[in-house]
Length: 213
Picture 1: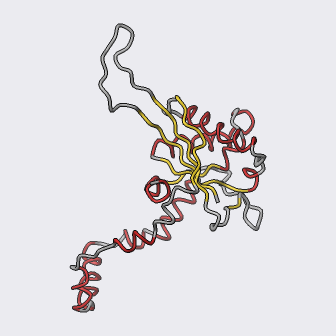
Picture 2: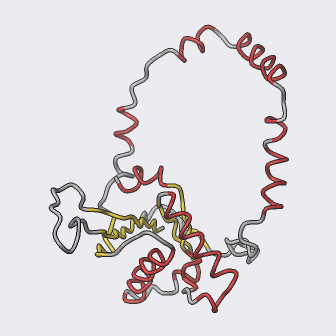
Picture 3: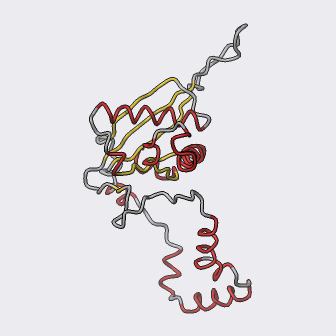
């Protein structure tokens, strides 16, 4: 399975002296990093029932409302008094050993050592490092097109027709990539966006440290 990271980089840690033409000499770059894990199965674009990974409606507000009502409102709809009674019952049933365990300071160094293989960079490939801004949807589409061209060169173009690539990105990255996906779903060929963008699945960047540190 491949995991993609598209992020920006700025050479701002330097002294800048204004000139008559510009106020600074800061450049904006785009880093495109691809990580592979041969032990993790690839994520198919279509399910066993031939259902695509994307909802054709994009953001389905009715589905979101139903999900919130079923899974969250039963908990969020309780008054403080009702919830407080449940907390009291939980605390009274808890043993002294468990309460003491909550106060114990744990050392997770051993657990971190066990994850070093997953955090290794040996399966990571730098797709490109280019002088390019990364501020809007157009910039992210152009950066993704670089990845698509690389897959064409290595004769793996069909990968995007059958599988998806989770993409680790920050909040602007999520918004812009999802906007590009929505534009492609709604306007199809009139969007001018490659259909391969549908195989890029944005994810929250708290895992960036896990996969790319």
